[in-house]
Structure formats: C-alpha cells, structure tokens
Image 1 (cartoon, rainbow, N blue to C red):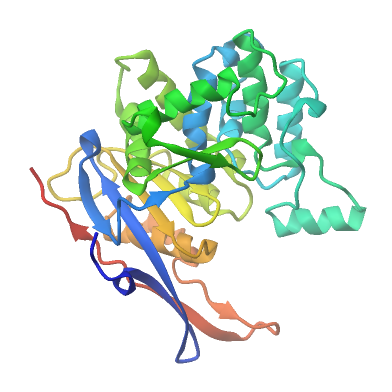
Image 2: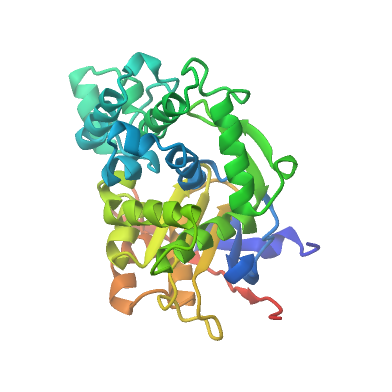
Length: 355
C-alpha cells in the first residue's frame, strides 16, 4: 500500500495532555473464502504471528492421531494452543501430558523462562525457584509435538528442527490453512526454539476465520473441519488454560461464551475468530476472522486495539464487551498509584470492495 506510514497510527498514549507515544498498527478483517472485508494500515504486512498460530501447530499434532493414542483430552489440547502463565495448573498438566506420552521433561527442547504472570514470577523468586522446560509458556505445544512424533513412528530427537518430518508436516499444514504454497511462507526460529512462520497479516485472519467456520458446522464435512472444530471447542471451553489469571485471551473467551476464539502472539500480534451471528457486520452472515499487528510490539496497546475493534464490529453483546473494559482504555499510573496518563485508540476501519 502507498498510504503514508504516519496514517497508520492506531493508538496514542498521553501523559497529562502531552503526547508521549504514537503506536502504529495494521488490521485485517476477512469473511468467507478469506475475502478482505475491512482493513486499517497494511493488511498485507508480512507478519510473524508467533504464538498466534499455535492452533495451526496443534492441528498438525491432532492429525497424527497422537491425542487418541496417548489419551490426551480437550484440556490437553487447549494447553497445546496455549501461551500459559506457568501457574501450577499449567505446569502440572504439561507434566501429565509428558507422562501420558511416556517421555520426560528432559526430552523437551523448550527452555525455562520467567513467568508471564507477575504473581507466579514473584512466588518463584521467593522460593528461589529456577523454571524448568515444563514451566515454559509453550510446554503444552512441545509436549504435544513429542507425542505426535511418537505417533508417527519418528524419532523424538531434534523434533524441533526445521528438517524433522514433524516440522515438515507443520509447514504443510500451515500452508494449507492459510491458502498459500509452502514457498510463500518464510520461517524463522521462535522464542521456544520451534520454527515460526511469516506471511501476510490477512492470512492470519483467514486462519482464524476457518477455525470459527468449522465450529459453526453442525456436522463437519471433512476430517480437517472436525479437527479445527475440536481445537476451537477446546480453546473456548478451557480459556484458563490458554493463557491464565488476568490474561486477555482467557478474559476474552470467557466473556463471549464460545462465540469467539482468540490467541495472542509475541511482539504485538493477535488472531480472532468470530462465529456466524456473533458480529454485526452488515451484509455478512457467516463467520469472520480478524488479525492485528502492532509495530512496536506493545501488549497493552494490542489488547486495547482488539477490544476497540470488538465494539466497532459489534461482536457479541454490549454486556459481553463490557467485561473487557479494563483492557480498552487502561489508565497510566505512577509508582504511588496516581493516574497520570491515558491511552486513546483510533482505528477507523476502511470497508473493502465487496464483490
């Protein structure tokens, strides 16, 4: 797009009446067949969605038959899609998944890291606890991948490497879900040591539209649709496992009661799928997908923008959206708790040509 970059400012932070920061962002909203409905900024912006694509990685695991072989349930599937807070329930479930697959924590190729949850991190510091790989926010995904490799008869050594047959399967699955060729997707290495894709932002929206579309099917017409619907149901039925206490993904999915699925990605990416009948877009009867990228990776700005878009697109009810008000315009406070600033979000979505 040739739009001046300055016009992509989606949020402004103020300290008193003075502008402190301006945050550039991009938005894509798609409908059936991935048709672009609305955009802000550059919907084709090449984006590393990071953990926002965990549902696609979980699909590749699910399609190996690993869940049935090792007795994983819907809670385990939700943890595979999670960027969890390392709460006791998250770590315990990750370890239980390893036990079901008859592998050990030493087999995980993700490392430990400080907890996303400040509460958990403070508790760890008090205990002088060093987080292990099962404490990683991605431990559910890694446990699922170990099980998938075993289910396919592949060695688990180097399961995280791009050349491993499991990661080759993930790459094929990612391309199919985004309606791209494998050559269209560039790959880097994520924070948890797994390959991570890069593609146009609107393709992330398309992926989440497909999740919502599968959930809308009363009887899935293909094994893949059934698998996507299962992932959607697992995430929305167990939002506390997908993120954690006080986290946006958990609050979002709990508020909308199964009508919306959402997943954050590191450095300011978000994917959202909305089922048919749960939005107010005129002339669009089916499900929609929404994707957001904040250029500076600011998480508070990201959730403020996503929450504002819920209102613009009339997603859910006013009462449901009100449950996320704390994220829409978070107050900026200083060290003594005094309110010293605020955030203003301005994301005028441009309607795209409808054929």
